[in-house]
Structures are given as structure tokens and as C-alpha cells.
Amino acid sequence: MSVFPGRGPRIALAIGGLLLLQGVALLGHRALEDRRSRAVAAFRFERIEAVMPAPELVLERPDGARVAIAPGREGEAMLVHFWATWCPPCRQELPALLALGRRLSPTGRVRVVAIATDTSWSEIRRFFKGAIPAEVLRDATGRVHQAFRVSSLPDTYLVTADGLIRIRFAGAQDWGSKQAHEFLSRELTELIHS
Image 1 (cartoon, helix red, strand yellow):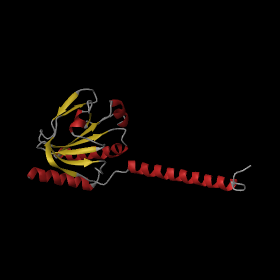
Image 2: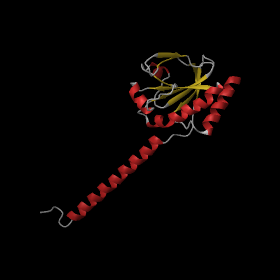
Image 3: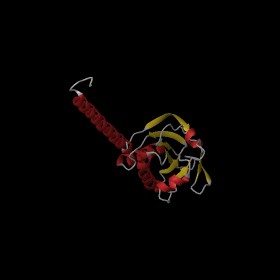
């Protein structure tokens, strides 16, 4: 005997409709989150008000050798970039950042150091299909990551030729844009002449 005589099919239909709506909402949410994780945000930055000297970078090369880099103390500005292979926005923006660095590096304007926070070289090798660019090094100890107080990935810092951290680019950037190239060229020129 039914508690709601004659209403069983209507209740079943209503429950089915609600389940269908919930499924559509879940798929829409997943699609939106997917799009957000793939999207590179507009080019944005923040100036570091409490100017501080950049710490020495003790990093690992793909062959396991350690290398020490003193940002800015070699007479060139440096973009110190933190990323990981498991970070979708990092994977998306990194090729354009490396390309921008290669365009600006021969002019002596800026050097890019892309610091992977991955726990081993195997994923990094797989990401680059075996040919790891010279700009990519690994923070094997996590000390460099901590010294820069990196709180999320990707995270990039402009260290000027005087060894000071001047600008932070939080999150993914459109490094391939004309805006990024012009901004860095202008900033570097202004900082050299100030």
C-alpha cells in the first residue's frame, strides 16, 4: 500500500528531474573550473614596497650538480620564476616566459631562471620530452622557495641588476603578449637610469 496513492510516478519523475538538473550543474561547474585552470590571467604585477635583496639561489641542474646564482650581482636583471609540472597554469605559461627570456637575454636586459618545485627530475624531463632548457633548474631543498616566500604557483619576481627584488608577478601571466615585452623593457630601462 502506497503512502501517497497515485503520486508515485510523479514523485519518481520529480526525483529524476532533480537528479538530471544536479548532473547538468555538476558538468557545467567542472567545465568552468577546467576553463579557469587553463586560462592565463591578464598581465598583472605588484611593486615590492619594502625593497629587499634577493637571496642567493642554490639550485640543482638536471645532471644533479648544484649551482649557486647571485641574482642581479652579475650585472643583469633576472626573472626568478617558480613553477611545477603538476600546476596547469604553470605548464601553460612557461613556454612563453622562456621565449620572452630568450628574446630579451641577448640584449643583456634580463635573464630567466625557471625554478621547478617538483620533487624529482623525472616529471620535468617528461614535460620537456627529455630536452630540458638551460633556464630550468630545480629547488631540491625547498630553501629557495621559502626564501622568496612563495605562497602559490606560478610566482615570478623581477630582481634588478642591483640585486633587489622590485616586482612580483603573482599567478599565471601572458608572457607572450606585447604588453609583457613592453612592460619589462620599460621597467628595466627606468631602473637602469634611476
